[in-house]
Image 1 (cartoon, rainbow, N blue to C red):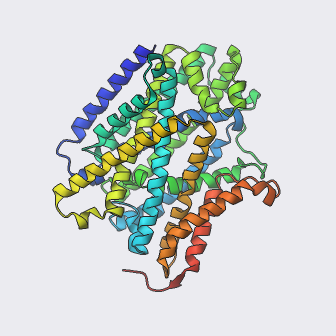
Image 2: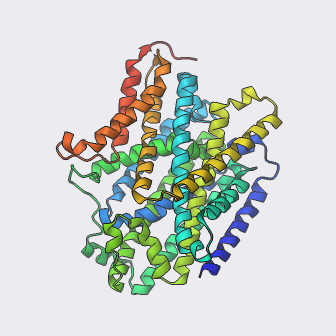
Length: 490
């Protein structure tokens, strides 16, 4: 089994480099940073599906059905509202200012301190979030494949990061846009093949499966208990704002959108992407319910995993140990695709953010060759940090720590939200811009303390995704407090 899986991994990697060779031909810095703004909108829309669904999503959304049923669908409904906001509020601004890094808008609207603060928050969040998402992919492959060969996890990590480094090194964004289409295709294929294997094994059609899921209570979609962190309004509004900040205010996702030829094309891309993403998330929920029904029908005991909070391991457990070889092979391919697609764009986005927001590359290095040298050094530097985070974390692996770090990373988007809302919707200028970084650190700390003590402070209330909204709102109010009415900077 391991040899067969490894063979498919090699073939998949070869295919990636074939696409890389085609897309990186005659590539320059404009190609790397903006894709020469010639990306077909429909290609970007399709490829962004893979970029938005990380390895964590690939495993956690189906697995979470065991504990939260279909309540995640409320978040999906929120996605729609969020993408509408991005398409018709944020994208027009980005195209108007002709941005390469979206945090340049903060620099033009407020000052350089705001730009560097927004950029630094993005860098911190993406480095931790993407590196650890990649770690989870490597950890699963290590557990079920590479451990059997005696290959240490640091070798697996280095190999996979080197592969991503090499295929993004020259073509950058242009390459990522096209490789993401390949990775989206394999991820969706893995999802559909697994569903087919489960349905065929049980002899069920969709109606039969839905009936079984409904009887088991997995199809509950709207939670009306306002104390719960999965209350349907919390899910909807949380999903909306998560989409706005983690897509619309995220350099990784927006860099792909800004590679489209025109604003209209970018908006088409966003709305097409939204429709596809809703369908894909519904399929992931259906897969989660189907896996649980399959386990019940086959007498597979998942109670230990569920009780330990390790629902992320339900999918790999069934794929490797209970379904047939086809399911295992496609699970691995889908998982690798999810890992690559969430990391390759991050490499390019972080390189762009550091070059434009931190190093001001076009002004400090007017020579094209020097820009290329700097850009490549930054790209390699990011790769080394990725490897370091993965290796360090592999020695202190703990599921609770993983969730904590992802939660901490999500707090960094609150200040970014507050900065952009202030910049877009007010006509005020900030007097003490030196205070912006302090606000960006203080407010998330306050929100963290409120979240930890919310049940005692608010009569049993538990924060869900709406904590992000509170985070952004408090930053916005703080910025108002240190601002004054003045004509906007031209």
